[in-house]
Amino acid sequence: MEKTIDIIGNALGALGLIICLLAGVSRVVGSHYLMGFETITLFIGGISIMVAACLAKLHGVSLQLSK
Image (cartoon, rainbow, N blue to C red; front, top):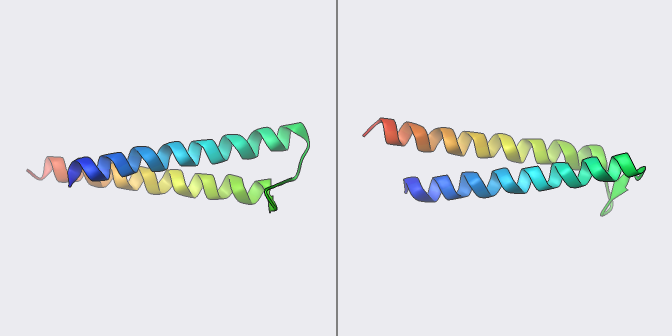
């Protein structure tokens, strides 16, 4: 279970980082929309996914410490 939570945390972190990078590069290039969404909306979504990844990793650490 701990390994699954760790993998989920890593995957969410990578996904959030990719979304933030895509939104940031798109904004720097001058495009305000990407895939039909505003780049700011995608950036905030990427941040929220990374926060979820941090919470998953924190839960994994707390499970390891409780043993």
